[in-house]
Length: 361
Length: 266
Image 1 (cartoon, chains in turn cyan, purple):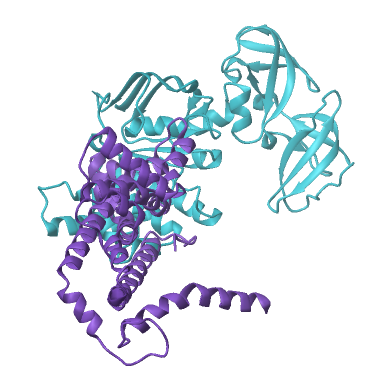
Image 2 (cartoon, rainbow over the protein chains, first blue to last red):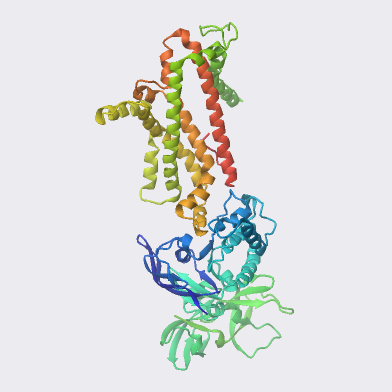
């Protein structure tokens, strides 16, 4: 894998506001990379910095080995799909897609037309060229924006919350299409999103950002299974947190966990923490279980009482109180044949496994 | 019901005097009074032969065209800054440049006369009137162009730059076509305001008067009143046509930009 974009010590100030803090980042060629975070975390600023719409206060931005300082957006090998799509309403679909080809003197009219048709074909809009741009639906606008950006064969395609304006069904469909498109064209995609599911589904690697800093940079599975700290763990998916006391750190880690007692985990389950003392343990809801009547398990059990039941059709989410823990444990159970949906107040047994724990800073 | 009567009475009160203009412009008598004494187009014919009137009209049209161009250019700068740029005291500054909209024209006229003649010691000419008309027309232009610019997605220009256009190229190829109806509408309104403005032109005109000032001069001679009526008829027709074109263009612009019409200047 070759590095395509390098950011070193990038800072951005708006007056007193520190939007980006010491960002170090390398994005590879052909990678689907996501910048994920809550609103105001600096992810869009970072994207606009790469695109050339924002200058950096300090630090280096390089694309393809070239320092981009002072290079305006129109001369960078990047193209962007804007959150509002920014389709030019006074032009037709074909004219929109051909917009970036205006400066290409080396192409004649016929060659440009072929490129436009190919681009429209690629995003599934063949035959839409003559339509007026302002008459398109949200999903179609997005496809035009994609075709318009990709026709220039940029080294990087920047996507600023491209799916946030679409409804849920359309969004899921476009997720798959974007992934397929990225594999097809083979260029680097950088996606900005606040939707953790979107980032997990689509990306090769994800940078989770908080308050202008990168909280964790990892692939989807690592991010989900081994979050570095509580902030990342809370932002990605659902997580139960239990207070713990780290007693010994050797090859394995000995700890006393509130409600679960003394146990041992592997060093791999603690991505960051190597010190003894108070800590927090995280457990995902789907790694816990409820022991239904007639079922058996060789895993560990703890007594609990059902506090809340949320029925989702394919899944049921239970909040179960166990002795010695203030907050109830959130447990996700698949609804299967022979498994009843428990009532609030029912006494039950919670199945747990220390292999599913992650020790957090 | 009473509201409807009020509305109708209001409209009659507003427009009936204007309706008198064409009636007496075609009336075959020098005295402006009912009953009408016959149909004639002589008064319009007299307009053709009156060379001092022609000079006055030429002055007015020149002043109005220049005013329309300059105040619209200034309006574009202000409206674009207002819609897209962020700077300290923005609200205050935007309010301050709209102020000439409510300043009494007589005060503007007198103070400009003092500035031009006493302070700068310049002669009065069409250009002094153009400067003053630009001052009073620019707020109108800003008001019209604000609407055009505020409906623009700020990502639009960035998208054009992202696709290879320079900053100016992006403005020219994307922003300008989208606000063009607003620009034309702004020029037409500035033109109309300037064309029939009297007070400032009266104070600041040099040896050769503008059309409204010339008409005012004619009023001292009762015999020429029907000619004034004829001229007035043409002006009213022209104003209505120009303002209608301006509004049509504004609406077409809104439709083209694909945004909901939130009520225009008219």
